[in-house]
Length: 287
Image (tube, rainbow, N blue to C red):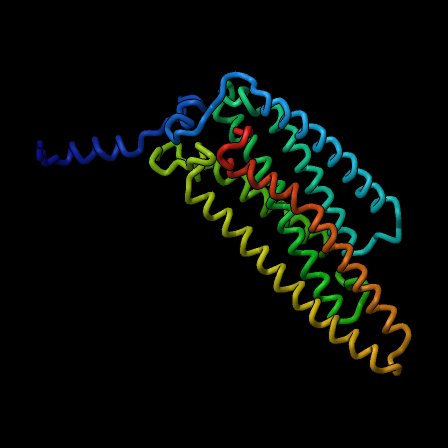
């Protein structure tokens, strides 16, 4: 066993070696490094997943386009909550585009991708999913405010809503582009994730924890709304002195919150599918 002491030149050599980056390597190099399977031919399950994915993407694009169009042309929907729902539809529309791009760049095609294209593929998914999650949080907070102030629609101005929507997309873009601009493992192979071979494990951990925290906040907010509304409805059932308009407002608020929760429930499967694509769950045809 050799025990060699390096001088200053040796230190410089080791520092240079530690900073060596693999920008000129192929996607296959990183998949081999992470010991993740990378197929070179089309399997039956690959074809089925791509066919199903493209079908779902087209449906997502069409349905969300209808939602956005309805909100734009119908003046009854020109309120903050509907603008946020429209933005959620825009995020889902973007997710449909991102998923369609994934379908055209997955399976055996993964091995042919450049590093730049691979990062674009993943960044599209990261950005769309983050935009949807953060938008759902904004909707939860907006509904919490309206329920507790007994207003069917928020008094937030259109300018503030647009600023909020802008902030949602800035946040989504930042989280989606961070890996492409440094938070990757191209210069530290030992930090590469086995699920997404070009991503750093620390980024995936941060991304997962961030989304989990947002989800937990939404659970707390909607639980608070549910408890408050349940108490109010119980009081209303016991007393007849409440003003009819008060009852009507409360029922309308409950209906709106119910619609939003149903929307969240319907979006959960596609969100989970996108999340599995983002982190590259093992044993799936999506690579």
